[in-house]
Image 1 (cartoon, rainbow, N blue to C red):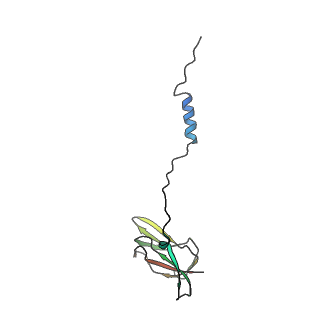
Image 2: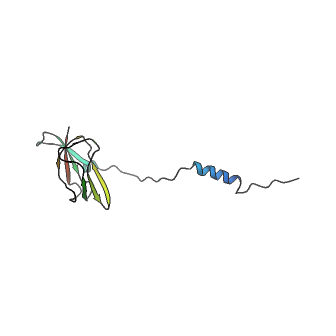
Image 3: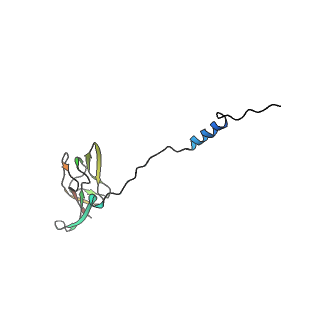
Length: 125
């Protein structure tokens, strides 16, 4: 009577391992994020100069102004970039949370800003 050879690690187990590897998803590590404090994005106030609510865009961190994307008088939508800051070799886009008209720009390229410095005023409309 012939005996069948026992299954080896290179036999059925290889097929199972191959199937398992095909179904695996690549490992993706997501870093936890915390919402930024609201006061760093900007605040809405009523500026008597404009007689409408004005949204203040402020610097979130100390940085250099790399690029000013908008001009005074320009119409912007919620989520539009206002300026791009540079800090520690990283570009940090600063966006508006409200639609409106850029009334004042308080920065220019290559200027330095500190946390909380006023970057722009958006006339909410």
